[in-house]
Length: 261
Image 1 (cartoon, rainbow, N blue to C red):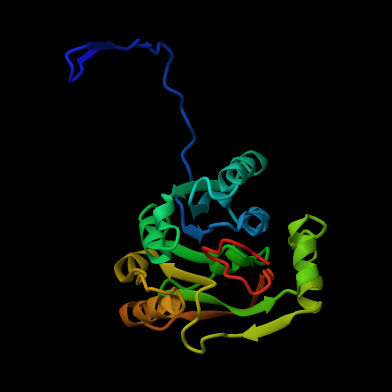
Image 2: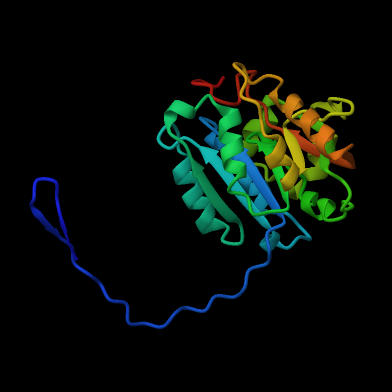
């Protein structure tokens, strides 16, 4: 192959001819759930979140993909995702990188990343929220008429328990009931009728139609989004008894912060 450059110089490139046959791959199970996680400067908590997802029980992982939206270079997310792909080959990871100028544009990042989703459901998940090991098995039982789903409760873990999870001394999927019975503040059905945004599972066709609003400050954008979802698709459903765990981060911003306590 050859091409003339703008200064009329000739550029050439070697060609490699593939002579092997086409590799036949098994047909993949259609994706049902697309988990979208936005994470900047939160790599250690993201690792705990991905490990919890990788240890879901009673569920076909062929139905799941995890889309991680991040800004390469500002933390170790690329390195983490490479490790997760090797350690958990059953977990499909989709990378959604953004330039640093968008690091504080969470609404834009979510909307663009949702366009990558192949699932019928989009799960918007904060990068410090741990899911119970049977969460997706529970979602499988949700009626087709339900437009969005939220867990019943959120438990705020104390700093020492969060630290043991982050360093790997505690594997939450092995002692979930003990963590629920241990110390921490439990919040029930936050948002009353409209669940706030640490976990929002929405039908994909509704999520893409409503989209996230880009506020000057992100506070309240999740509520605004789910309000639009309800207006578009109707009332949602609480997963009775489903509790997610919120890792402590010392009160610092979980998204876009330059420093964490």
